[in-house]
Image 1 (cartoon, rainbow, N blue to C red):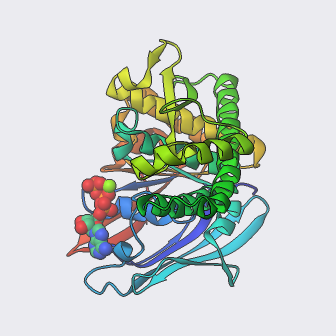
Image 2 (image 1 turned 180 degrees about the vertical axis):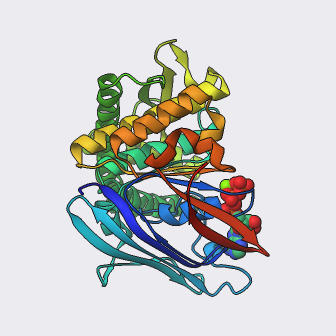
Length: 370
Ligand SMILES: Nc1ncnc2c1ncn2[C@@H]1O[C@H](COP(=O)(O)OP(=O)(O)OP(=O)(O)O)[C@@H](O)[C@H]1O
Ligand SMILES: [Mg+2]
């Protein structure tokens, strides 16, 4: 069947998992077990099927199982539309993770073209009230799901900005050193902005297109000060004109790294940051689902969804609505919760994993549900 899902997943020496081998079908995966059993570790492994640092933003070294800490490996059979890929992801001796697709060395960016992965984790409960960085990251992950090349633009921009910031810190005043870096930043920066804007349009359309139990969010990009020059030439001019100001600050003060994602609970007209905790969470769920709907239409399949402890925070009605939506979309959503009863409404629409801790080692059993 067409879609996007893992039909096999193995973990070796990945955090608390010494070895796990799972045979899966396209249905959602409900993972249950006590605190500390290794549930989040399991979906963190799945999050590495997309570019970036995964859902904990950990280094590859931190993911190696202690005390050995030699390295780890994840393999998966990934069904992506009408193709099936064998994916290997591993890290040795704390080095950056490596990827092989169908036996050939590949980049994380190449993985981003065949897999799309989105997640909600408990730390994102504070997304609307904390700093702009977390919101930007959330936005960029959604943007990447629509435009995998977005990851490349972000990397190019950050690399050039790091070098420019080093010049600023060293109080280099000779313009020669800046010109090429600012041109790279302007080109990547304008691309980043355009990709983000396009993602917001897709999300708005997808939210408008379906009646759901989750409240729609109106989203808008805001700049910390002034306006973001949207055209590469304008951004390049703004960077070169801002050099003296940036020299004083010791860093770059204009560009897409200063963009914030502003959200409003549409039905009430209340800014997301002023909403209740439950409402803030519901807005995130709403956006993830809208993103999944848009991808189902555009890419041809909904993304892999990783929902860590989302079920426990929703009331029974919204929980049932979430499950219905996930099943209607046909998404392989990986969901965690402490007990099987949290997934009762799913019944045999899902497959179940029970994770337990045995003296510091996670054991995973494929079982029935509640
Ligand atoms: N690199 C590592 N090597 C070995 N164990 C690790 C490593 N990193 C984390 N752990 C352990 O993995 C265990 C399980 O963590 P995990 O976050 O997956 O639990 P969980 O099942 O999601 O629990 P909760 O319900 O509390 O969220 C923790 O006890 C943690 O100490
Ligand atoms: Mg957890």
